[in-house]
Length: 192
Image (cartoon, rainbow, N blue to C red; front, side, top):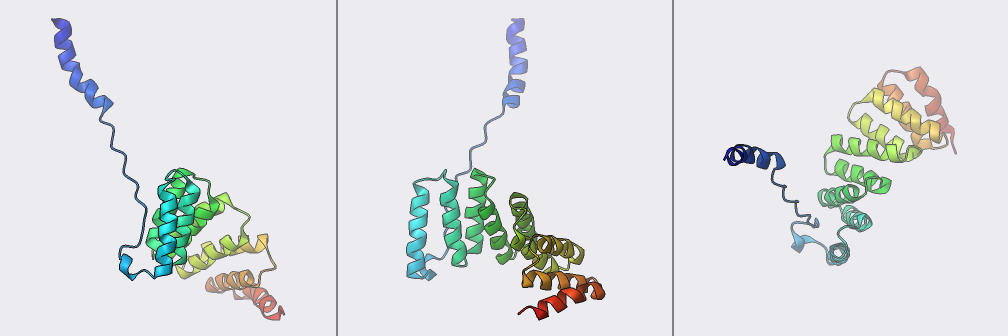
């Protein structure tokens, strides 16, 4: 009898500790909401990529391809969803992470875009164009000191890029460092 009473007392506790397993969220393939406004050739492409994806929902590369197709056709929100799924399946995908950053930026989610770009640069730290893009975005947001750090990193990785020299000079000038910016501007102008 004591055992039964004890069991009845602790049974609800044990049940609540185990908890009910949350239902796994159903993953859907992102597509443009208004399919009637999608150009026919784009619709065919998205039908093809989504069909291939439907047959292989656990393949991060298929999610990347679908996200890339969406991005190339300016469906940035949908592209970001697809790319996030690719990264969820395989976290070390620099191309997907970089493209996610661009999709978020274009979808007017600049802060999220910068975070994604920084994550991509952790995966590909030697990608000078990524550092330059980060510097450009930081300049657009008025984050001058951060932009200078990013532009210097890009310049250190590849000092031969004229655009990188310009972004570095711009970040220096925005921070009031005109004398330091001048040689970079002169080099930019003198390159033939």
